[in-house]
Image (tube, rainbow, N blue to C red):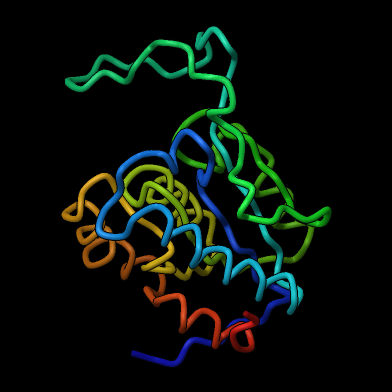
Amino acid sequence: MPDLVLDPRRTAIIVIDLQQGIVARTTHPHPAARVVANTVSILRAARRTGAMPVLVHVGGCEDGRDRLRPAADEVMPAAPMPPGWSDLVPDLERAPGDLVILKRQWGAFYGTDLELQLRRRGLDTLVLCGIATEFGVESTARDAYERGFAQVFASDAMAALSAEAHTHCLTRIFPRMGHVRDTEAVLAALGGPCD
């Protein structure tokens, strides 16, 4: 496995759906609190070294009419989300320079200006974190791959709804699109831990 090298001036930390309603769920193999803590460590290093924090959250209209409703075997809930469901968790320590993206489906590129904002800033490398590995993170990663972005997957700064889904993404999908590394390796690549 080659050493990971990141140029902070060309790197964005893409944080997927670390928001009140999703962090409240049970996740595997890492509890959501650990995912948030590891992501916070990466964000602190990013802010210190000049990498771009990008905080992505999913939301929509109060009545839910803008949600996708495909014919599927497992239908997503149609009820309105409770108040605060889409709010980013305060632990992320949102800073004035952070980019915040509101998405309305799993992937962070479709229907948002994420790509435009990354390209205008000269950012071509993405470090992905978040919940859930097999939904928001994977969908965003596939779109980033198709757009030619280099990617790093912070394996212990993400979690899934099942350990099997998480492992599948980390061992079968993500290695074909980028580098899978843990938080410690990402911190080292950004210039060392800042905590």
